[in-house]
Length: 364
Image (cartoon, rainbow, N blue to C red):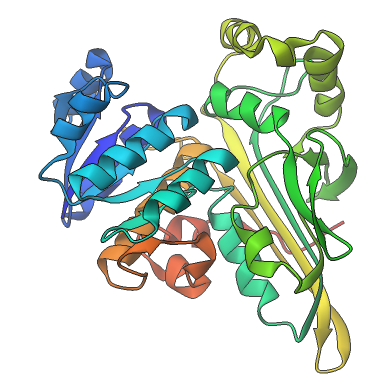
């Protein structure tokens, strides 16, 4: 299967190596960053210099491919999806942006090809898990989804290092958050809804951020009492981000905030991804709760060290593409994450990255 992979960043590079290494995909990595492409070419990957923000150039580059895998910043998701439609390609991406997903859903109406956005960690895997647990209940009460991509060794006041796109990070901190509260779909404020919990003896906080639910509010509307998604951080992070975004009004100058963070906050490859889902409701007349909790750690061994966020994000989109190729997903139109069966995902050669993680046995 011929794949055009858009984006040669850390996540894009990992996706390229996984798909090409499987032997079932001919991957061409497309980006305007020639230095990043040169690195990939040295590893034996096919590359093509393309200005991914130039629609005409992108459309021409996509022709002849079967699948577009988009690992570009979230603001390029809509044009990339339009160009994939024009080129007659199936489309997969990692966007957490709600507006982009709604537009891609519109693009997919009547399309002869498939469009599957939000194929990463959150949205993505977290929605697959939540839907799998939720559908086993006779009556559904509460679905709580918590995800954190955290430095293993926090040293600054924010207790955070850049583990993924700063554009995506600030975007999810600044936009309204979908949720279901007392049976009604609502728009919650980002950074609100602060809560604390402990897992494996470590203290965490969680708060509202945008995009993590994917399409679950639509899927479970009128079928669940409460459903929400929150980002997990170490205690104190939320208050400092509110100071930066609200008190200093940097939410109105997001480019300045991003520049500050890129300049002053080092990236790290030593991270941990926390996935924590709790679902409660009635089964056979009994009130029950089910929990899915995992920690995925960075891989430091080998020639290509991988951060936990690289592993989990790349595994999510590669598994989606692979399950599609195997005919285990719809072959046209808009595909929701919850259409992926969790057992299929976890048994997939790419999705197994989540199986090989450490399952957390005790919740405090």
